[in-house]
Image (cartoon, rainbow, N blue to C red):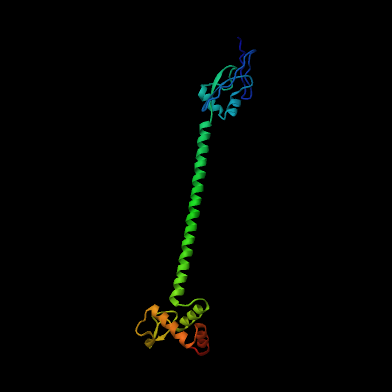
Amino acid sequence: MNIKKALVNTLGTVAVVGAGLFATNVTANADTNVTVKQGDSVWSLANQYGSSVSAIESANSLSNSNLIYVGQTLNVPTSTKTATTNSSSVASQNYTSTNNQASQSTTSQATTNQATTTNNTQSSSNSASTGVSGSEASAKAWIANKESGGSYSATNGQYIGKYQLSSSYLNGDYSAANQEKVANSYVASRYGSWSAAQSFWQANGWY
């Protein structure tokens, strides 16, 4: 069988086939063995199989990639493995990124919840320690600020602590808890409420 040889002058020039010769491509996973047929060029094969002209030249020891023959078998390195690896790498990075975002979101939410719980606990503790809440707590705090600047250790002669109560009222117990308790008892018996005590203080400068 006679096979015509064709010199390929440019990458776009294709190989020429003789009458009666037809070939099929054989596909492999990493490298592809290709039998050159009419219309093929190194450039077209590189483009078709995701390879490069230089890779085909190296794999087949081609001194001149412009010269290939119909019926010649070329080994065409493909980027299948690389593409798969890159795809896996991207998937892994996306998975890691998603997990990190979820972890950060969970941590942020947990921190927020903890802060909310702490604030609620502190709020409850403050309400319990003064023994009053709402407008009564505001009125009580207002009087404490006027009397002592809110200090449990403030003294003025016989008047002691945050609410400047007589030492006889405190009966020698100057603890914060006892000052709160005695102050509530004093105001309840004398004014009926901290709001009434505040009004009296505003009119008279003491309560």
